Every structure is written in C-alpha cells, then in structure tokens.
Length: 385
Image 1 (cartoon, rainbow, N blue to C red):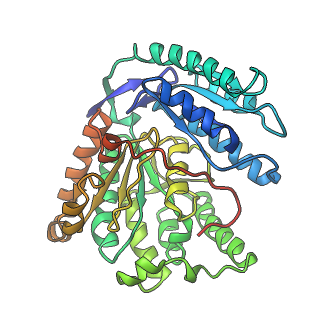
Image 2 (tube, rainbow, N blue to C red; image 1 turned 180 degrees about the horizontal axis):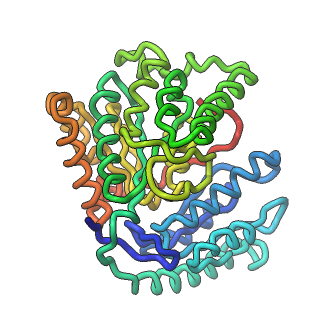
Image 3 (cartoon, one colour; image 1 turned 30 degrees about the vertical axis):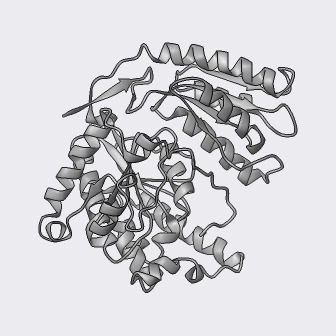
C-alpha cells in the first residue's frame, strides 16, 4: 500500500513540500514571518521562547527546533536569528543539516539591520523554494508515513468514539508498515499503567511510568493542583468528572498495537510501531511535540471544534458532534458516526485511514484551505497543564 509523497535524501518522505522559515528566538519571529510571506511555498515556525533560558529549557528549545527542521515535510530550512546574547543559530542549522536537506542562516544584526536581513532572507528562500519545486510527488510505501494523534475539547464522546477512531486508524497505519504515536502526559495521569502494559519490554514500560511520575513531581513541586485545570471547565461542563476518566478516554488515541518507544519533548522516535511523546496537555505545544517527533500527518479529535492547524503538518480534525460539524465547516474535516463507531469501530478506523492517505497524498485539510496554520507554541520544562 502506498501514498503519494515527496522523497527525501535521508530515505523519508514528506506529505507536504515546504521551505521552513524557523525563528530561533521570539524576537526574530516577525522577520521570519515576513520572509515566509514573501515567497510561495515557504512557511514560518515561530514561538515565544527567548534568551536567558536555564540549561534544561535551553536544551529542550534547541532540540525541538532541530527536530522540527528535520521533519520530512520540509524540503529546506532557513533559520532566522539575531546575533546577540546566547542565541546560536548555527547549532540549530548544523543539527538540521544532518538530515541532508539544504539549510542556511539569516542573521539580523550581521546583515546590517532588519530590512537588509529580510531582503537577503527572501533571496535565500526564493532559491530554496525554486529547488524544492522540482521535487514531485511519487508513490512511496506507507512505511514512510508517521501519524501523530491529538485530542482537544474532550467530552465523554471523545474516548469511545473519536479517540477510538483515531487509534484504530493508527493501528491500520502500523499494520501496513508505518508508525505513529500520541502525547499529552497530563491527560494520561491515572491510566499510565494501561499504556505501560503494552510496552514491548521492561525498559520501555519503565520509561512510560517514569514520564508520568516526572510530570506529577513537577506539578507538586510547583504547588499546582492539576484538578483545577484538567479536566478544564469545558470538560467538566460537558460531563467529564475527573482526570482519571479523561485519561481512560485519552489512551484510546494510541490504538491497540504494542508500545515500542517513549521519547522526551523534541526527540525523534526511532523505528516503526506506536510511540509516546512526553508533552503537556496544551494542544499547541503538543502538536509541536508530534511534529518534532517526525509526524508528517496528524489527526485531531475535537468535540469542542478547536480551530487551529499546524504550520507544515496537515491536521485532520474529526468530531462526533453533528451540530458542530454543520456549524463549523471550515474547521472540521470528518464526522464520526457515534452508532457506527460503537458497533463497527474497525470500519470507521478504515474510513479515517483512507482519508489520512488522501491527505498524505495532497488533499488539503480545512485548516490548510483557510490558512489557519500559523498558531503554534513550544514547551519548556516549566510545568504546563
């Protein structure tokens, strides 16, 4: 089984073919966006992190930006950066270059100011985009597909219906040689033992349990009561009573195949199968974690109709709420029939799997069609609920 993807030098394949314009710190986000908006098929990744980070946070930021740049949906990358403080754009560029793709750096101060740097950046991006346009879609095996699985705006329908549909679709991806995984550590607290029980060995099982213990320890050390934020007010109003109930629904995202790896934020899992990424429950930061893990397509269940996509990874939004599917046609891509999901979840998963292959082969998602893809965020070790 195949999809139409963009082959990469390192053997991966993209479902999209963008030039990534990545700001290395928050203060270069505007110039990065100006460059990307000036050249067709360029797309920015911006964030709010800056200089003066403590060493653990600094490591997470560098690691994540490098992994984002390595994502197979980017044919080339331009890093936009100032030349001040502890900013090190070369570290990011050199890390991305290990994937074999073209990488360059646009230095705001060194070029003689913002507008001079932006002008030079546009010329670099234009050449990169021209070269990238020569790469054509071709049939590639599903082993080159990596599905990220996300949920947001959860209700009691999420676990047994939309999350189950995503997890079953993930099973199909893995059964056909691909890989994929899910995240949101704060939202699996209380059910981590169920995920760990699926681990392929004791090492992976312990990593899964350690990730959740670490999350709980950070929350307690900060004096945060997670029950005040997770489930959030919308979750409670829609009928979720506790984090344990939410967790039992969230773990359905991971399907039923064995857990092969557990990685930290910004890390890229190796091999095939189903993996877990340690991220917060914050959807924007979690999406970034999945993209950094190498996911080239993401499915996202949202009974609350969360509107955003992601800069360079297509995000397929699904819901079980017919009223929302009718009301928000420019947000949601797929309606899961509740009765059918309960009686034939494998059939629903097969249908979603077919949609994933269509999107991987070039069909645009609703968020891509309206350009709602620039909202993103990056996580550091400061606890986030």
